[in-house]
Length: 220
Length: 319
Image (cartoon, rainbow over the protein chains, first blue to last red):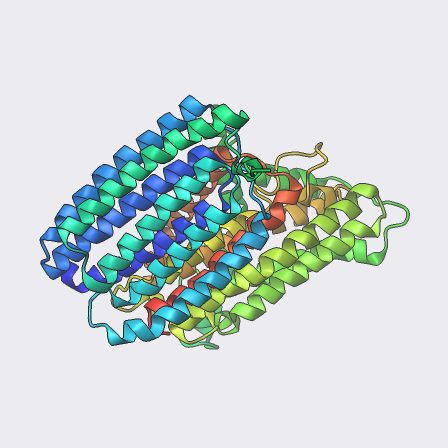
């Protein structure tokens, strides 16, 4: 039964992942942004566990557990703590208005789908058609990073990009070796912590976490 | 029970009469749920009928400069929506009028009703009417492409723009999960909230704010004209609910030539509508009304999701 609906369910998870990427791109409120990020982590965890079950690749269960611990629990908690400490709960302004951003987003999705279509036709995995979606969500996170001016959404964009890459790895080649995955997970965790400290420094210096202020750091 | 035969015609007329008569009850149910969720004492389920009776018994007051268009618009609007309520597949896919249930024709029918209500809003020349009509057209021109895209996504799956065929395909085959329909479902929910003047876009229970859209257009109506417009608004909610159910939860709809199935399908539809109405009340309670200038953004998101649904269909479901 599940064997039959498994691939369809993976496609559904992929679609939800893309939906969440778009929701993050258009979200103004920073608290909702973190919740969406946690939801994205949860979908990623579920789809990884499903791929593991369908293909019998037991090491993917480890990845799923790692995703759950890191991206659903630890990172959102760190981010929540960060915005509480920084006291930056207000709405996030975007550099270009949201309808324009959505149109750019849809162009990116078409680009990603076009790029992925020939590649996925060569692949023989259960999850081959999800590559386009993984690529699209990486590009959307990238777009989110470059269209936000505050530091916290940029960090969330960075973390969400990692989600997309992870999904691409699971979809294309059933996940990376465990050592690599552990390394990447640690990198992301440490990255988030360092960026957190970095944000405190920016605020110390400029009384705001707007990264546009960094442009003033020129030597004259 | 083939299309055009006497029993088919009788069944069609019975379904149409039931739809037109029971549509206000759906509005009553949504209002009741909303009152419960907001800790108010709820009006009865039959409150919309009492309002309609009251309005039908009142005399019509017309402005001096009202044109024949103003007087005839309520009948046209009611006619359009009653026809739409008749052709949307609700309980069976083989009723005579279901052959006319083409997705594009249905959207056109709804657009005709919108055109007349907007013209009637501008006819008297009051500031409120014109303002409401312009806003309605703004919402309409953004919502229509999104609605069409949602319907096209379903058409891509079933290779037909006929709603009856779409329901037939989706309801009576082995269960397949369509990721594209998840996107289309979200888009459709957003469009129907906007089209039915529901809370993120418009507030149906206000007559005083400058933010109103639907109510601003019908301010000049009274008596039986207002009753017909209110009734048409209930029918519109019913049509959109049935369209949503037909596209996304088509289970329990009777197959071709299935008389018993038709009788079973009625309570199934009632249960589905009750659940849908409750969810609508929940959405309305949980969200706040948007500024009018956020409405284009809201509807652009709906359009985008509908386009994504088509793209996802091409990528994941093999086109």
